[in-house]
Length: 109
Ligand code: FES
Image (tube, rainbow, N blue to C red; front, side, top):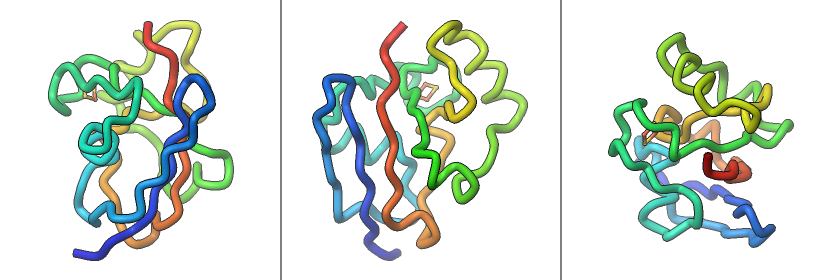
């Protein structure tokens, strides 16, 4: 495993930089273990709650990739706060290619 850096921007604009995230971790786990506001992850990463919703920085959308069908269905339930760059952070697993990833925490619904 390697250490990589990820940045979360919380709903109030606070920037939280985590520079010791591990490859293989989910982005949700990194957010939870660093007390990032708004990453509740009520279902524990089962893609069943959408309380880990983030917006991927436009520069990182291609590197992160698209949601699968199950995740897309879950994201559809977030209603008006869903955007083209929405993803569930529990479904994003960190790799070295995501070193420097930046996301904004979506408002809770
Ligand atoms: S933690 Fe529930 S959908 Fe991600």
